[in-house]
Length: 313
Image (cartoon, rainbow, N blue to C red; front, side, top):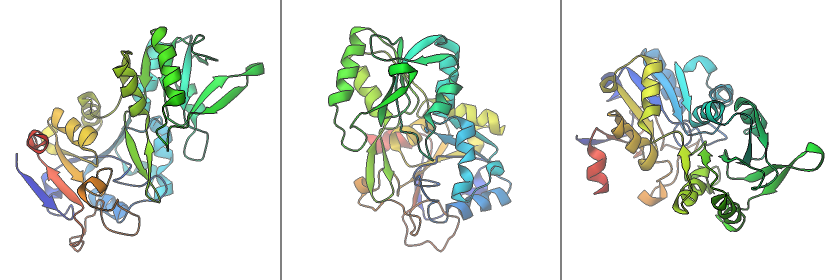
């Protein structure tokens, strides 16, 4: 249960056969690969490590893999991938077919393809209002996509992602509470650090707010142990031969501890400013590295099983 500080992976790589990797704040920042992350992953692969991405992205697994070349990684770099979006879409296919969704999501862009996610959910129609909906599909925190005139899909900006203004969100949630609509959250993250030091509010905040209002919420992704165990199944390794690498105490470290898996806490990620550090950049140390020369970067803290309780007590 001992915690040790490391500035590179070199001292601990030999301890594990399997490595689970978060994406944002560990591999990339949404636009570029972080400092020496690609080299570190290449080194892990050269040593025969089995690697799986474990991400709270609301994208389906295939879509997440297809974005890897943008960061300098081939799609076949990893032995598996488990995303909260994939698990949420599977749940919708199993429990909410032939129904209408109040759809909170992202705007369509190179990074986000909400229509593909909806297609992945199966036979779901987009509701035009709360009264028209059977459940809430919380895929993103940027806009409300609803069925408009002549079957067109209209986008209403939630004015939440960058300002955390709950005016529009609360109106929708309160109406939904009155109808007892269940909410399915495809991304439980609370915040994310974007390029340029921008902090964005994520779907997990909306899900938590709805739950506090008394709403019924089903969330997918970390810190639920089942998602960590799904990675172990993909890799074919035991928990004591695996380590998870992430930048969130609440999602990565807590989830790894619950699954009885060692964890590496990357200090330069989502908690960087709380720790008096600058978030990791593509051009400066602070994320994952396999280079022992990164001595000036307090980039990682390995937290073993059971250590989380001591850190948060």
